[in-house]
Amino acid sequence: MASATYSAEESKELYGYASALTSYRLQNGQIDSHGLLRILVWDKISSKGVDLVPPRSIGQRIAVMQCNDIYRLKDIFEHASSDNMEWNVTQPISDDLFDLNNGEKDFFKRPVLVRENAVYGNFFNHIFFQRYGYHIEGYGTISQETTLQTSEFTHHDFFINANNIEEVSYLTTALGLKAEDQPKIDSAAQKGPKAVFQMQEGEGHWYQGFVSPNNICGKLKMFVPTSPTEDHSKNQKLGAEGITMHSFWTDKLDFVFDLVKQHNLSPCEIMANEFGEQCFTFVGPGGCSWQIIQKKQSQHKPKTELGFTFTKN
Image (cartoon, rainbow, N blue to C red):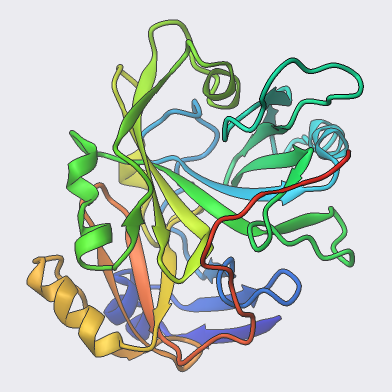
């Protein structure tokens, strides 16, 4: 684990928030190509952040990880609530997300599926998933040394303050991500989204996923509610508690900086962050805060093609 500090003046210049900062960088196993977690500890916080609000609230950010035992994690978090911390834990539910099942299934022709649940907390939210009957190499790597037997972050969910998905097109045109598919609607009629996001009848949201052409993992999923929901986006800013910023790295920082400027996204100037990395920050449409970091390459070599291997579990 690496740590570094930043003065209030430096934080104001890079992050737009004037408070001294101690920063910790964590890495899950050997995965350094994505899924890094930076914990920003401000000397003074601006607010409690989004806090424990309905899952579909605008401003909500959710980190997603693969796990070895989803029911064990459910038990842990259900027993973890205290006077200082509360967790809203959903019931794990199974689904066939990739249409991998063909024909009738029985004891010997077992279903191929994923089981997932959500854990919503005061300053951090998780979705955990466990696969049955298949494996995707490079999309969720679980180090056996981890206490909870979870992977690096495989993707993040963003409930954004936007009128439509098109408002985040800069993810493709400025940051170089690929849209996985055309936007679609998730609704309470679908058992997976209904359970994970605790949707009621008539509720729904537009959804679109974005992925790097250089890595099948670490994708972003953007959600725009189609029905009324609470808006807590004013508390989803740097300086607040909770998930407030996401990072990309590139070996062409000046090139990406120019693209972001051309999109009128008002980046700060390129400067060194608390870890001495050349970078810049900006806030995109929808309220997402980003830090783009200069990095030549990663030691971990990610997969760039999605592939399914069927297993016998």
